Image (cartoon, rainbow, N blue to C red):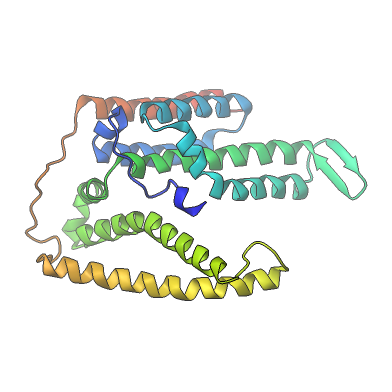
Length: 265
């Protein structure tokens, strides 16, 4: 399951989103994260669903691949939905089974919050699916360039965030390999009491931490061997180019926020 996680992976295909400037994608996602909290009824969430579908379609990434990667997060979405249904006690009672009561407010909140979570995961995943780690680093560095005036380490922060995103799928693959190796030795991660499952995770965490530190050391040595000394004086082989389509994308996302504000209750 973990090897199918979509977050942090780059898929090289020919699409509109792949051709966009990384700065426009970063800005569009930040705006989307803000405006998604404007939605508060069925109409606004329907508009968000249409926008999310169009964004996924324009990426040319197979929908089946995207939702296979969401299986790992599906349980968290279901857990969030159940929390709202069971513990929100406002509005009319829709279901009454003695100790179990489902209220109208809890049901609607559970659906809306779960959809909001799903849309956020899908849209933010598009950043890494359609943008290389180098492009993300250059985009972040360019957007934070004004902070250099106060001697803020812009390049180092952008590089750190880019490396973190890049190593998410690597760590997931490593976790999956270690789990399979432990299962071959008789470790059971899916059965038994909660305490027993927690104890079974310990043999997984120790080699994972060791592997993570080893990879970090190898990366540091490789960067030093290639003469990396930070962002000072560093030149770029490929320059970022903001085009008309990037401006159009930002205007579309801003228009989405305006439409949601009009239809919200």
